[in-house]
Image (cartoon, chains in turn brown, red):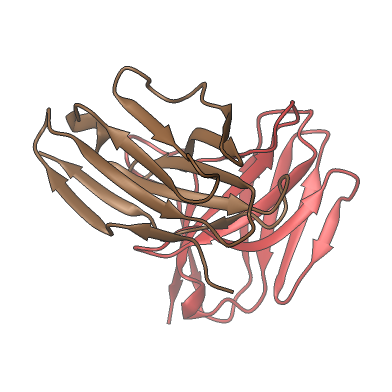
Length: 113
Length: 113
């Protein structure tokens, strides 16, 4: 079974620029999650989708972050405009249902300069 | 130990010794827990899980212990190998209307040859 695919692997942008990350979950996984992992910390949940609907976005900084999963398959996370403190690894995870079978992608490392 | 700023607590062990990594979780209502291993440049990888109705579960070379009284998890790795060097996170499923994992701050395991 193919894993969770994320792209790009690395991105360097200047502050105030925009950036987008893409995630393709494991086929058939209904639930998709985006996490932010700052260096030296555990992953922090940003948003959770069930199919194409948002289940929880309480930790998403909505003034600059947005995410969508229009067809209930792949997803895009966008930051506009980026700040220095957004430098982190952005991880996507998916699960078939509920909490079991949670699988992570390798992440996108964002550096804002 | 306690993490300070960007520094993860670190456990250094001799190859062949047993390792014990500890984690304090936050929510007494959490009903499911997972230990993850994260190597540099990769996403978290599932190691072992345990439900709240158990206090011990064993896998291949790994054992997870759960003490609900003091909200404490531990991961025991037998005969630690160089390939075990990584950052280890515990994660809990906080019971509410959705299924999502909340991560702890992590411990770095260094295996000395």
